[in-house]
Length: 417
Image (tube, rainbow, N blue to C red; front, top):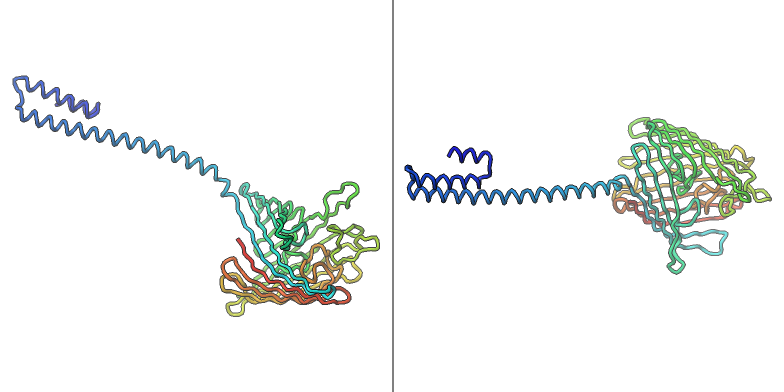
């Protein structure tokens, strides 16, 4: 038995069983031979022990197989995870808008009715903790201030264009350095388009700073960066903006600031489609003035009961023009169509003289686009669900020195994702 116990410590149980059988046979043939009953009992115990050993060895083999399979599966999951790691660095967002539009222009023989769509998508890729790059595509034509696509042409396919392509460096506290073709970096009170249309994407370099109380934005931008022979000369412009955001009291917030844009285009041809967008041209078809635009703006936000209420004023003057050099807009908004079942109403009055701003960049809807118009904007919207809204906008405008009537109705269904 001592030998069996020693064998158990060093060899498998099956070897121990064999030793016990051999030992039993030896004892049965010697002077101290065990009885037949004892031998049979030992045999049965050994058989049971052998059976249990076989079961344990089978279970051990199954466990080894499962462990090997689990390791392989884990390795595969790791490889898949590594191959999909790039997806975690990509962020997609966009919007879609369906619009019915009616235009009643006194200068035209009859009203214009059309159906339009706007579809935009932007992908942002995180390169590392400090850098990201973005790419945006949009419907429409190459119009710098519109991504609308009119439906028609017998169901023809429609164009997709490069809307944005930029880098964004955020390695400096409260600061972003942006380059390429990007969203407008300048603050627009109430998102109004007195100077900048919402679809305009500047091209060049920009710096944005915002610490929550003070903000500063600056940009160096191109109207034309290629000075190849026989074409438009290279033209660039710059802008700077300073402002602050202050809480005056509970539920009372004031945002105010000043901007200056230096756009030296006097003597240059129009930059898009030979269209001055309302600005004054010389007899030779070139811009008469530079656009040295000084802007002052303020926006006040508060609440009436549970409803947000905001009021804004925006004023601009071209320091280079001798006449028709000023513009302003002012308005208020009650409510916010954000959460399902919420709504908003807004009213704006705007007067933008012919050479107050560069017509290329201003609102493309007001007065038919460009400068030299004045009048009213009435807006309403209702949130049908999360990121889904229905809106109506009505323009009651007058164009040019003759103040001809220009009315425009827009009915929109909007989706964001």
